[in-house]
Length: 356
Ligand SMILES: O=C[C@H](O)[C@H](O)COP(=O)(O)O
Ligand SMILES: C=C(OP(=O)(O)O)C(=O)O
Image 1 (cartoon, helix red, strand yellow):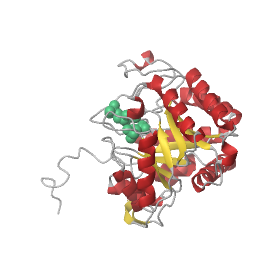
Image 2 (tube, rainbow, N blue to C red):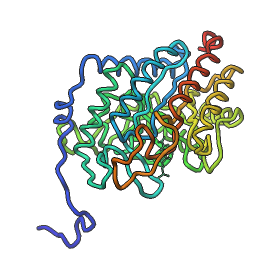
Image 3 (cartoon, rainbow, N blue to C red):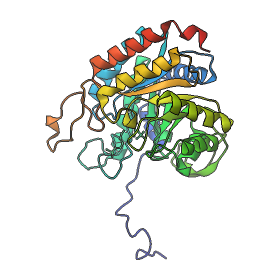
Image 4 (cartoon, helix red, strand yellow):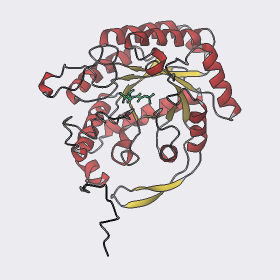
């Protein structure tokens, strides 16, 4: 018996989606790309285990909307990453899924054509192609895991994952993280609450069983081992930064009290720079100076950066989009990014050898 009067009354349609296997077959991982992911994750684990003293820097656009500009950015970043690899371990921010405060463009996977056509099937395949292209360059990538099904389609190409400020408290995202193959950074809440991120790290470190899909797209009970590489990302909150020495110390103490490794990444963007991108290099320099003064808990930093500084609204006529400029949060431009990272690398050069 069907009951359309009481079932799915707010669902307009169910459109079929290719299975993960189908998309993985069409955009198959190559030996080179797999090696980038293996090496990227190994370096990240070594940084979190303190056997690699380098500073992790997750840097790149707030969101990818134009794969051509994204690849242009990636090529430049790869050259810079090689140049500073003695002190910085660089991971490109490749964010395809945007959590919105209310509404807005939800990212390249959800609406790749940015015209409300929501071709998620195309967006997913194109996103995977993009990740493959970056991995082929030898550059590891980091992304925000927002949709709990997406990792089945792209997770093999990712080296670092963030759970965002709006979802750190969500059980679904903690369960998801417990099964992810990458280290996972949990952001403090938008109101600045660090406790929810600490609870998330504890929760994700344990095994969970929950609903998901398998590679054949079959609805499945997913049973996980737990992820022991959860760590804290401080992004400021409630309009106030939380990367200062006192906030970092308090957050580190809270991690230690919870019996967790004291590993902190500072997001130089968002409330830590009052959403003013031009302040991000100043935040990065401050973080690096904390390390120079002996801080042991900061293992990484994040920067929202693009080819062109600032951001732009999505125009009706997409041919009017400025090349290499964010359509979500405002970013630091390429020249300032390069300068900020070279400066950080120089400041760390003499202190890193003694910092395991
Ligand atoms: O980093 C991205 C944004 O801060 C986040 O997606 C929220 O965006 P919004 O407040 O513009 O919706
Ligand atoms: C949405 C993001 O950050 P947060 O979750 O900290 O707001 C982001 O980094 O794109």
